[in-house]
Length: 105
Image 1 (cartoon, rainbow, N blue to C red):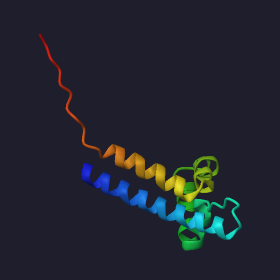
Image 2 (cartoon, rainbow, N blue to C red; image 1 turned 90 degrees about the vertical axis):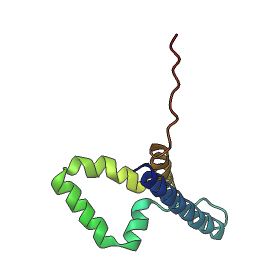
Image 3 (cartoon, rainbow, N blue to C red; image 1 turned 180 degrees about the vertical axis):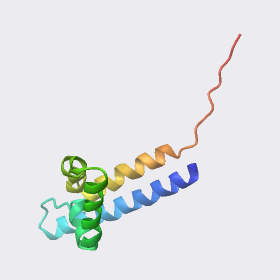
Image 4 (cartoon, helix red, strand yellow; image 1 turned 60 degrees about the vertical axis):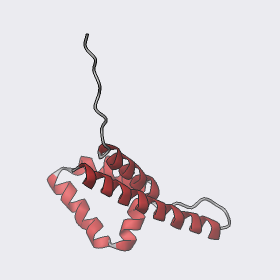
């Protein structure tokens, strides 16, 4: 299980690096102005039907309060930030823990 979490964490970190390179390339092409692609825009350009399906699924099963303030804020964040945070958290959860040595006299 820990190995799976570490592997997923590395994959998400790789996705974050790819998204950061894409944004850096767009920034250089735009004349140096910082350009970042929000996750929602990236998702809509790849597969708009699944984004609409995710929205209806969240609104019907959880409620509209979850989609509007919470998930839209995540979808407005830069893609590399979201994947980077997710990758670091998964990699941290999958780390090998060192046993604590307790000495009792």
